[in-house]
Length: 205
Figure (tube, rainbow, N blue to C red):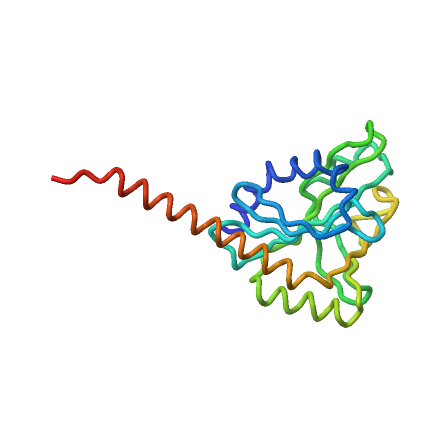
């Protein structure tokens, strides 16, 4: 259920990210953004700057996180849109392999000279456990990288010219805590407003 609700919520959010792509390219710091029903902490890439690593907290369920990341590609195969909805293999930090990432959006950009491809982790994670794991990996390598990989059904060179990106997660603990506080703050505000509306609608005899 969490997975389904998150994908519904992400629909508008993904398109907002596409249109904001170029504006974000000038920002070398972490950002925390409020997209109505979710809060997103993001950090720019070290190889392709505009391809951010994004940590998504859904309001009402602030103790779980989903991970989104993007690859900008100038490869233009005719069937690139066939990637949408596909699950492709990735490798994290060279020696740690995740099963896959799901392609959730493909969008043309730069006057159709490139495509913006958004991917997501295949599941939603409990925030504390996820944070411990990602920081353990980052501290072991002093880096966090995601690399697209080949398998028997997928050849990344057909679609991607730069198959790897890296991100600096030194500030991740601070920023994810800020994002969670923002997420919880907005939930509390909505609960107060709802309670106020209910009280105002009470009819006393």
